[in-house]
Amino acid sequence: MHALTKYKSKTTPVLNDVIVCFILVASIVLFIYGWQGMHSAFNGRDLPALSLDYHVLPYYTLRTTMRLVIGLFYSMLFSIVFAVLAAKYAPMRRVILPFVNFMESVPLVGFLTFTTAFFLGLYPHSVMGWKG
Image (cartoon, rainbow, N blue to C red):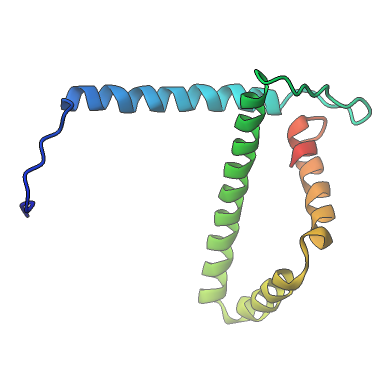
C-alpha cells in the first residue's frame, strides 16, 4: 500500500541501524550494571549507605526502573498462566476467580508483607530480596 504523501527520511537506513544498535547495547550494559548492584550482599543487620548526591540519583533511577520492569514481567507471567488455567479447566476456574476477586479487594498493605517474605526467601542475603 502506498502512502498518500511521500515521506523522505532525513537519515540513511545505515544510520538508523547504528542508532538502534547503540540504544540496544547501552540498554544491555545498563541492565547488567544495575543487576550487579541489585545483587550485592546484604546481611539484614547493616543497611547499605544511601547517598542523595545528584550524581548517584540516575543510578537509583535505573534500579527503580529495573524493579518496575521485573515486577511487570512477573505480573504478565502470573496473568498468562492463571488465565490459561482458568480458561481451559473448569475446576481451576472455580478456585482462581474467587481468589483473584479477593486479591483485588485486599489493600496493598494487606499482601505486601507476604510478597516481602517471598522475595526475601527468593533472594536471600541480597539487596534484591530486600528491595523486592
